[in-house]
Image (tube, rainbow, N blue to C red; front, side, top):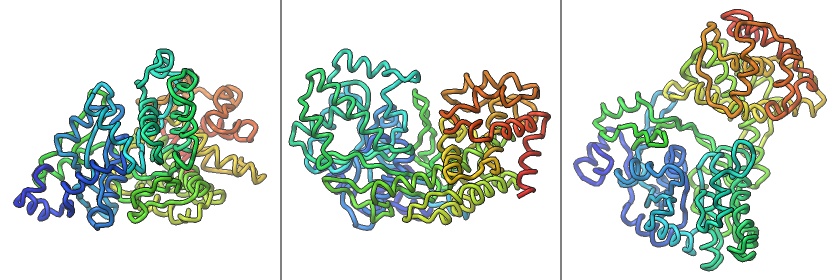
Length: 538
């Protein structure tokens, strides 16, 4: 069975007999409506897009609640389109791995057209211009990762591509954010039609990041005389162009070999894992968890597809911000980071396996319920108690989700200020003594122990990528042999607000964290001992 065979009557029966859900709508009709009068175009063709927003619209199409699909555009790794979209007629298989052991297999057909943002591809460029100048276009969304919006390099200066765009007055430009701004300029010239630019990336204030990048290009072009200032005014007018915030939550790991074997037993043939030249791992299928949340600021000046009928929350800006803080600062992300740090130290390769470890499971439960919930932000539309219960009892324990502590440990230095620093600041803001906290200091000490690059057996392990990795491991290398540190020795790390959001000396935690680090570092097995004692004393 191959995806492109779903319209063949005999093959369709085979799919259905194996429990696959197939599009119940006429794809040709949907494609004609979508390409003729596009309403939604999405940049970023990775797993989260196919498993969530595209799948939501697919369900609405199946229920006859909507009649158009989405146009998918890849702005970074063009091979995804040529290798994982075009050969399969823009179809994909969503494999939902439920915590109760059930597996749902759904062929998603809502992608009506796939393009690249390669402006040297004349056909794709002309088609993008047609889409962006269409009065019917309501929404341009993005899942391009936080880095996709950045115009700066690691040192904070304007990146080489952007500098070249600006110095040489490249029009159209080469950076994706410049390309998006240029396409919006085409829309402005054709009638200044309204549109919402909706980031759906998993990063704080994603819409603001998108807006800042687009506006930077527009303002530079205005200064250089490449565009009229009226274009900048158009982008700034919320009756015309908006950049709503959103919070997205759904785990969609790389294609998993266990899923491949399961699909092969069904007779499904499109199971090859594709690795592009840019090292993107993709396939004709996406494996994902069942749970999903998408909360969006409801600012769509030209209307929007009916995502709300598919379970997406639309609300005000303040509520989106609160939902994000609930998730990122208390109910999910801190638990993930704790499991990532200790999972690497204790040589685990799966999050669900960690949750079967009584010490680790007990630790994150205490941290979430006893230390996080007293200062959690309640958004009103989602109960924090319900959210964290689902995280701990349904999501993290799911044995069918192939997520690893090593993946989650990426960029930990950038995550700590939000995932733990905000909780510390909340306690400090209430006038409470943070030195009484039990779990958060253990995580921060565990992070220092992680930076030594030695696991709890005293053996070296590979640390996950991080922009500060060389700097921080260089400091902690002195303690690989079990050498004790003083609080003063670690000041170059523990005093850094860019890592912890607070100066841990001013917060009264530096001595405690140093003491915990020294215990964990004193001998093999001591990371486990400290975790066990923390949970036992709860």
